[in-house]
Length: 259
Image 1: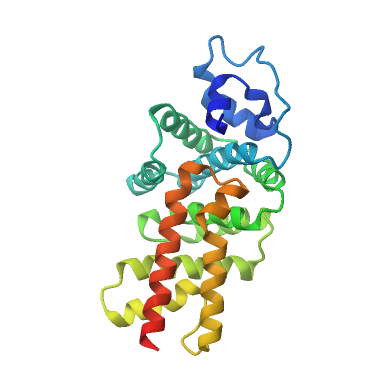
Image 2: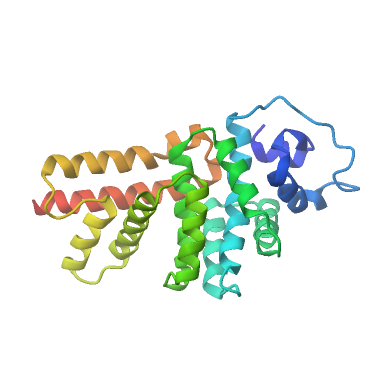
């Protein structure tokens, strides 16, 4: 049974407990007659188990998307559209989509325990650095949804990255690559596309062919869909990872052909 089947099937206890369990419980509660009281605990999936990590990733992603969207005081249509785009890419079933929306709304609430949520997310991910990076990329994309990253949002996301073990330099490099990807996809001129391709891959135009190839391989390894799913990325999110690898490959192919 998938992580989703276990969640809705009633074996809620395996899900994690703690603040993440409380948030997911609030989002799932209406699927159980009489609420969550009296549900039997299922300890069969311990810390680090793939299905457990998948539920953790799903829960944290949509709750933090809501938290970040509300950080500047209001949730814009673009930010809602971004969340819906992620749901569309995941091809969520009706129930899953409802829970994702509920999680988004939980993240918008006053007093949302963001630091406790992130601490548990980091612990549950069990040193899966690439998985944490994909999570951050989705959260940053939420903040960029309205076309800009204002100072308050940047400070907020820097704090999220710091809670997850990212240094400022690592976070800045991540922001630069994501900016490069956005510009690469939307670039109007060939020069803009070339410049953004280097930025997406995290290298400079002066890099050697060997350095370019190494950067390409590193990015592909970090975003390989099958590897990410094996580490705990929900299978529903495989299209998100696939789209990323397609952009990375297109950027590399462009630069390689120009050289």
